[in-house]
Each structure stands twice: as C-alpha cells, then as structure tokens.
Length: 119
Image (tube, helix red, strand yellow):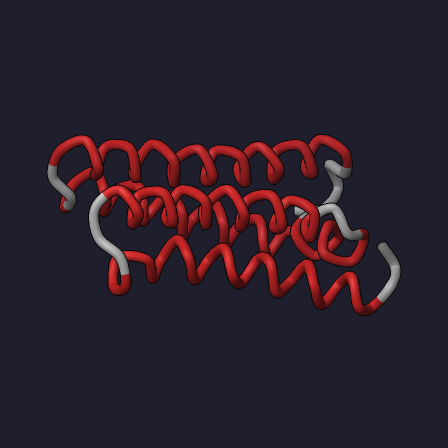
C-alpha cells in the first residue's frame, strides 16, 4: 500500500476505531455500547497493526528512545492501575500495560544483544 490515499484511509480507520472505542459510552448505552466499544477496539488494533508494519513507522518504533519511553511509561501506568483501580478492571489494565512494558523491555534487550558496544 504505497498509495497516499490508502495511507490516509488506513489512518482514518484507525482514528475511527479509537473514537468508537472511547466515545461510545457518551452516545450509546447497554448492549449497543458494548458492541460499539469492542468493534472499535478490534478496528483500531487491526488498522494500527497494519500501520506499524510500514517501514518508516517500524524503524521509528524500534529506536532506543521510543523503546525506553514505552517501557517506563507503560510500567508506571501498569503499577498505577494495579494500585488505584479496583477489581478486575484494574487488574486487567495492569496486566495489559505490563505486557506492553515487557515487550518494550525485551526489544531493548534484543537491541543490546545485536549491538553490545552501544551503551
């Protein structure tokens, strides 16, 4: 997909998924809210994964500063969710953010193994 129109369309689908997942509670209620939220999450994940496969985005996400930011920020959010949000919702949020943090940390370790001379 090197066509600029397809790139714009992909970003619009990603943003639509984010808006649907975050904003459905303000417009809908009950089962329709749940369906719109989950459909938005799936849409954003699918479009976001396609965007992340682009060479420029992939190279940006693999840089050390971005990996450090993802590791520290998501680790802090995971700890905050575990301590401050009650019940299953807080636990699941902490686990998911912790997984992102562990993934970024493993990217840092893998980068260090590939190039041990860079500190």
